[in-house]
Image (cartoon, rainbow, N blue to C red; front, side, top):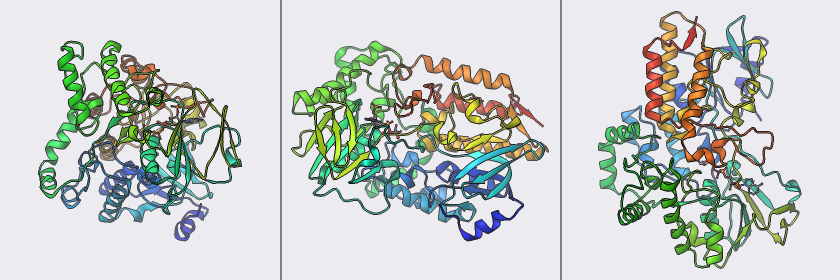
Length: 547
Ligand code: NA7
């Protein structure tokens, strides 16, 4: 990793450079936090591993990467000028356009001048005596700040599969979250894709268009739903721009920050005909409506869930010509929506193509990667390229990769050894003045993320302003606040079918045998979460110790 000469000079002097706040990460959360703190008049330094801004949208440049949120519900809402200036060209924006948008934001608000790129933070150590944090980068440079704000992303620490022989492979290979910046051509090649989560589904659809041959290595099938993306015409563009207040209000009112509000009815209280009609309507509409705007009990009542599971299973069987392949694509170990629903465009039809083969790893597991390709228990697949769409060390992984130590040198990793313990997913006992944007047990982990990022950042900014105005220098949650919040997170999660199935929400990643499965998100809903955060602020932060 290289750091800019100017910055290295600044930080390699014996006295560490000093700031009011250090932000780790220049994705959407880090960018917006920088903007807000600068507005407060604070000196801020952002450290970013990547070569530029954008976080998720910087790293995940694989063909097919795009929003599953309506584009106009995803952009920043804080600047009316920005909202009016930017035209989204598709209802669900592709990654290159999203990155162009984020570049516009960085340029417009002159964000880069306070961001140090190509710089991985190795450690962040709290100094009790000075009441500040010392951050060290991997190259040994140091910087200090009163506030440490982590904006490291819930899905940024990617994981390669733990398969024997991984590095013996002689062809091209790449993880989707570390996709090269140069164009990657699939034409005429034999491609293998491992992984069929939201990412795998997106990349498989693209590869199948041009590859000579595609082999999909699937362990657990997921229930996917049609995205139904389209371009935005001029008239619609005008309407979108005129209705931003309503769009954002709808997101604020919804459980997870999307433009889809759950139907208050139970799936079981309506007749089978009405239910079928409703499911057909949702299946025919763009976006997450079928997940987020469905009957209110599909995610909490197994009998209600079984009705939508049966419906979507039927759709898969209708769309795949070969009944045996269709059966392999229909999940049997979980119901619809109980794992993250990948959104697709002609995904199932890919399996009707002559150049595509589905390998069911439940029948024939991968034995090892070999120099020429992949060996399963019954076959050897020769491949020119392997694409790893194998996911992330979710939510806590990006924290674990930094040596974060609080009061008495306690390691954050140890504090979270039995699962995350936080207050509001934003602060941790024993780690004063550290704010964890989109951290574990924060509503932002189950949200149309930018909507919750804005809430997190604005709350953190208000807190810092309050402390400055009241001459306070140190904030940490009360122990009972952390205990109660952690208990509340698990209690609200207990009702959801999402917590009955292995997935990254549950901290399950089979490539990380040492990761203790524990619930990572918050399911009480973004509106309730926002209300609780607002209540804290209005009470003068009674749940915290302020000095
Ligand atoms: P996910 O949803 O964690 O999916 C990872 C996929 O990779 C999943 O299908 C895994 O199968 C598969 N996988 C992982 N390791 C292996 C090995 N060793 N062998 C075979 N298959 C493997 O990650 P995504 O990137 O798709 O999506 C993450 C989030 O990013 C998503 O929810 C969006 O919000 C954006 P498994 O299910 O473990 O059997």
